[in-house]
Length: 588
Image 1 (tube, one colour):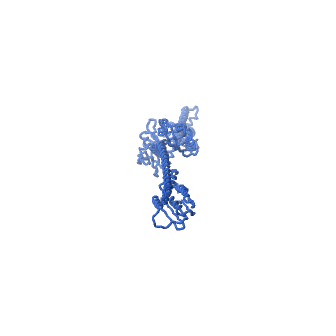
Image 2: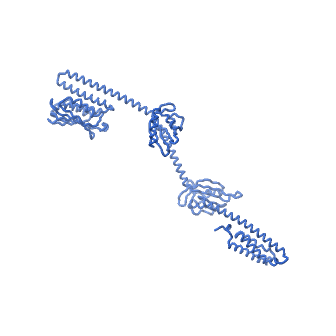
Image 3: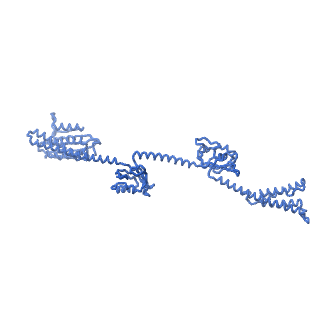
């Protein structure tokens, strides 16, 4: 429905205006007997004003005309018709018309002003109600709630707000930081009303009726009249819970980031590492203070990537560029060690690590100074090379010395006439030669501390194969077994003793036969077996020969077990079993 002040007059408006004038005419008629001669139109003026204010200018004008005519006819109608006319009555009619017109004009202006004021108030209320938050107006002096926005219920979830006076606002859910409720005069809108305080962006914790907590951003200020006195206060509150929580999470994240950065910095300082970051778009590198110190630069800085590459030794630059380009293409991790010439012309070794971040268009990483480590490694490498040379030289000298002993024994063998002495010398020559072969195998090993068994046994077979040309020597069972020299050499001497004994004593002179040497490994055991198809070992309880004593002594020395099986006319098999562990074998 349209506002009564702005809509066009309706039939009911004319009826009400004429009704008011009719009442005024009747009142004038009733007054005449009591007060004869009083102003004829006096009762019409209030009715005209009432009609103009409530029912409009046009109904008021029509009602005034009807009322004026009625009064004229009622009191001096005959006088108006006489001739010559009595001027006094015409003047009264004219004055009534002027007065009625003035009243209608005044009511028209007041009606228009009232309509404008009502429209302005309606717009104000509509705007106020549409504020996207809680908004209230408190009237002075008692703080009566005059108006609130439509969003107040949604924000506070409280359908009704106290309206009698501001003291009842203590029933709301405002809280202090410690969780205690706010008093009525502590709310910003009340402070603005009572003290004239202007509040801007004050944060307020609020508990809704359901117990949930929200954060409000509150604004409030006084409204002053023309004389400067406070006539009302306006307060607005906006739900900023999401923003406050986001800010809280941001602060927590920042605190965590700072803590992480501090720990990272401490770790980098402890590890003597510097940070670098390359922007792939600008090809500029940022260096932190630690890396700047390593390069003997004044402080943290950034520079073109080519300038940083210029610190690399000239011989390493091409390789560094190639490795870095490969890491970029793969989008993975960059790792390298290079020689560097610092700004102070010092030559250093740097280790560089970096990770490509394709999404950010950056490469970040660390650089460490490994000069001392490289110097220690170089010194150790040189020492190991020197040790290897010395050991090879020592083994070579030992081998030569053993060859010299063999030569002396062979010379002595040529001068001895006693048959037993010759046998003993030949056995001694064989044993010394076996030791020489073992040292040759040790000299040919890569680490000068271990011996490959198959290689050593093949050398033994090649050397003793000529001891009995009538007998076929079969050496096989190749397997990759490597033992430390302190275990391999005694095992080789045992094999030499057994193989020599089989070739010399298992067959009558000139009788053909076969001797087999086998090397096997498995189940943590290395086994060397020597088997012949000769006459077998005689069963005798006499004193053991020197060869048997040598075999038993060497077996005990390395913890080996010797198993002998022999039968007359069916040959002999001697098996030497040696338990080994992972530390003994390179591939077992």
